[in-house]
Length: 214
Ligand SMILES: C[S@@+](CC[C@H](N)C(=O)[O-])C[C@H]1O[C@@H](n2cnc3c(N)ncnc32)[C@H](O)[C@@H]1O
Image (tube, rainbow, N blue to C red; front, side, top):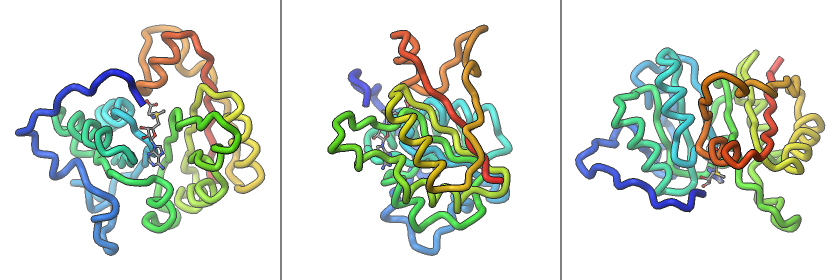
């Protein structure tokens, strides 16, 4: 994702609570049990990158648990280190494929929210099938959300946004899009994710939508 080299991770930092590998998690491992308070509402971010959202959300909402899944090992590790360094035990990273996580590891009606921010655009039409916002994932999100649970989807790629919104309407019964434009406007600039920062500094428009399971 980023072009800048990642800062070095302190080799003495203990990542045993904050980093797991999806394919190495035993089949019977319950995801809430990865946290100190398994009864807290669980939110999942798919494609965390360097983990800015994970660490600010975990710090801001100590009574919720945040599980990040990131396919690139170096980013999963970096995001986990950011959580570990700050002692944020309600944030845990999984190194692995978010689509596989949703396909068979997340029980129905179990998530308070799913976050997908600036997923890789795969610009060429013939590569669109590699995008994460595909029908199978949308259906799995709908199944995984508890009643009233939210899907948050932001991107700077208009075509991706429009196609994903059409697909969500066709493939799921999620209510939305609930308009969240302007949420990040005005006042002190507080970036949600690294990509949001990058795009806003370049004045690139950002498309934001939220959906709810009714
Ligand atoms: C464009 S970056 C955005 C990162 C972050 N969400 C942000 O806004 O700064 C997309 C990230 O999604 C990750 N990714 C792509 N496909 C994925 C998948 N199937 N499961 C988990 N992560 C994925 C990439 O490795 C990359 O870190």
